[in-house]
Length: 368
Image 1 (cartoon, rainbow, N blue to C red):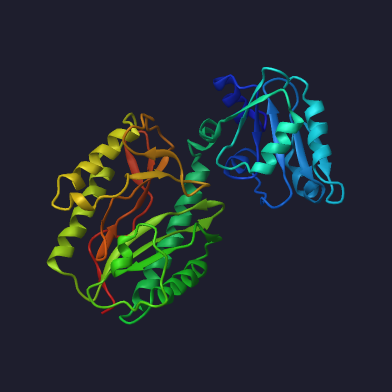
Image 2: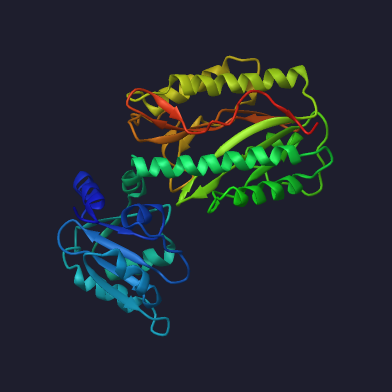
């Protein structure tokens, strides 16, 4: 079995003549090693026929060579620049001439990487193949599921340890600081993304930022959207609480979101499309008294990237298959007042789905 078998499978399926990879989640999935994207380009070119080529900064050779790359490495130093290495790689790949098609990661490759690649392969045409390249990550291995399960376990422990410390009068920034501290105390390798800690009217913004000038008060919704990383895999969890008390109107608001979340977890299974799952979840919200406050699709894939395939949305005919992981995160948002989102991370099994998140979903009042 070759290191590049997953990329060769994509090439065979698409008819592309080559794929160019840059550091990121797809690179990590193929090579098992993460490289930071800085000012120094690192690009791997895998042709459908012939040996692959890699343009690698010289200072990264010590990390790149142990990967067992089965091709030619063209390294370069800062003082000479990277262009000659790209041109040498292009000369090494004469099969990528006129009429050849090269797929690139359109959501990941930077402009200066792309321009250098164009100069190296001036007769080739380029296409954005990000979606099809990313299928190498669509089905998670048991080891990858286990890593995400552990990221979630540690993240949920952090939230449970944060909640007793929340008090009326704290700012969102105060609470965010506690959560971050607890994530690392729980053994997370890092954070999946900057956490969202949003209270009151701020919770009505799906991608809010924590404020330092607002102090939470009784009756506020308090939304946490956060996650810790473990072994490169990122948890993505949302829970919404109420501080001190909850009105009957907000209770009904919350229970509507919970019903939609429950519908998604009960409905999803292998063989259904992502569109069908989104439709089932969205109808719970759309058929409620709060239909006007629905803003977004049901969820997204999760793994090495926080957002990846499959997208759980209407119109996506991707069939769910065992090993796929995605979120179920319905939400409702009343501008200027409150927002509620409940998000679980689930894996498709042979017969249904398993929720990897286990944090309680029932309405909970905190800060007493």
